[in-house]
Length: 82
Image 1: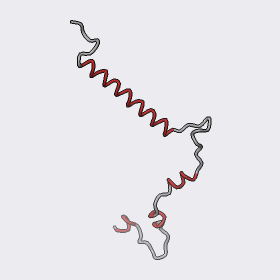
Image 2: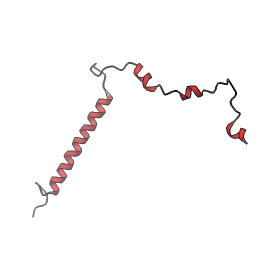
Image 3: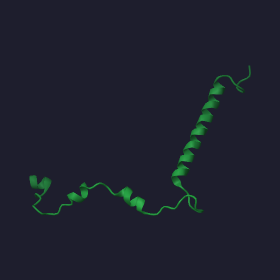
Image 4: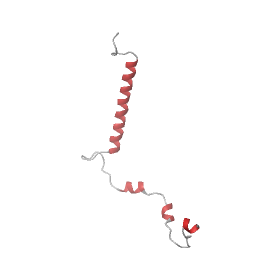
């Protein structure tokens, strides 16, 4: 039953790959190794900067819409005539 679940035991000196799997991941180190062009060069764009700008723009639009709704609810300009 034990062999069916876990397989055979690891023998002394046998390579299992445990050491390689126990090391920390090297993704960020490898990503920093490759060249990323600076955003000032023509033809290239910075996706992170554009994403942040679009988020800020969306926040501004939401604030403007909320402010307009509050003004309408408070009886500002427009609305029904009596």
